Length: 63
Image (cartoon, rainbow, N blue to C red; front, side, top):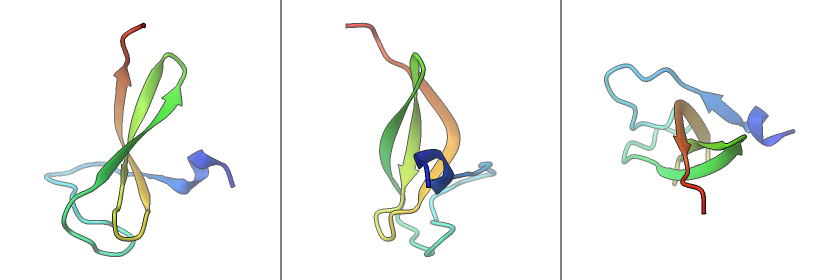
């Protein structure tokens, strides 16, 4: 299974702080995944490790 297949896409309504997999409700850790010139910011549940994409992308400065 590829990295993209393991990341669940989520549409944020009012708030997204509860893991949809295990119910942990104290927020998320973050990770970044290269997406061409930008990176996708991925939320990771610290309890079960489930990964969620809420649509954040960031352009990093060139070194």
